[in-house]
Length: 391
Image (tube, rainbow, N blue to C red; front, side, top):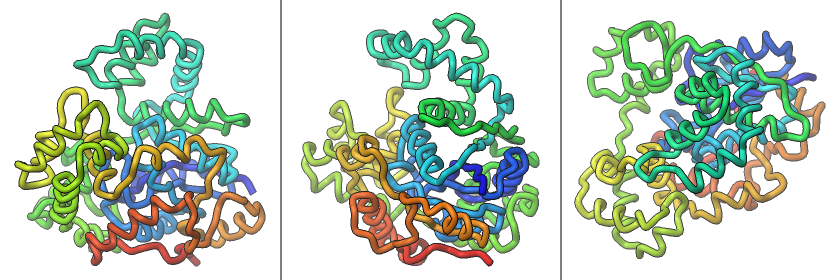
């Protein structure tokens, strides 16, 4: 059986994701669509809008055959590490091809950019090490480094598009595999962060709608039934009422009782920023107020959010980086269709498991996140017990 893979968060799943699943199967000619899906923590530093077991169910209903959990050390990462871990998950799952959506739907541009970056890796690394400007973020400095290269115009246009940047990171990670997978680029229909009332759908737009207190009125402005199914509606409405109160209570407590040295051990807390985190925690009354006060031009909101979650869930630098230095680590199967079940039996993949009560380094961090999250928000997030099955 031939498999195509998708790296996703489905936060939440919508019609655009269904289209990617359908096109991935169609364009690859695969028998099986495998999704490497983030667990409870997201790449931009937020808790999943909807519990992972519900999102797994939705993914199977949308046409996926096998959903594999991205561990917390893989999902709560900046672009490069997030992509690297996702590609590795698809490799462990036996995928021969991978697909992703992008506003730039031309696969040749991605291939040309990968070639450009790989051929000039030393020059780019040298610029980033010795000439990067302190008042600019990583992405801006990286773009400047690439712009200095010959014939980089197409690549610069690609780097200026957030979704294309993530797709490019997938391509770079894939190109470094011993046996790279085939690449399939699917043209996206709308921008990720657009909140307009136009038909284009995005996860951020849906989250924005359902988080609003007057969501019932706001929804009337959008073609909501073109984006989600009716059985998703009530779930999204319920999860949309979650506040950051419990999260910030825990974060604030940690920052006020731990020493600066202890706080600096958490992943993302670098360059002495622990003192700023503590100072702001003494004054800020809400999570959003804390985020706004902490961030500055060298630290993006996403990076600040990731840092905050690492502090809340006790994720240290050594824990979050160790899996990237190990040859391989196991992944949990979150759910499967009858086709997915057949695939698992046929392939007998050693690094995928349907066992949930495994106390090992591979699952320790993910389990501690699931446990604390189920305590912070007991009516919304559940600890894992067994894979979801569709029939």
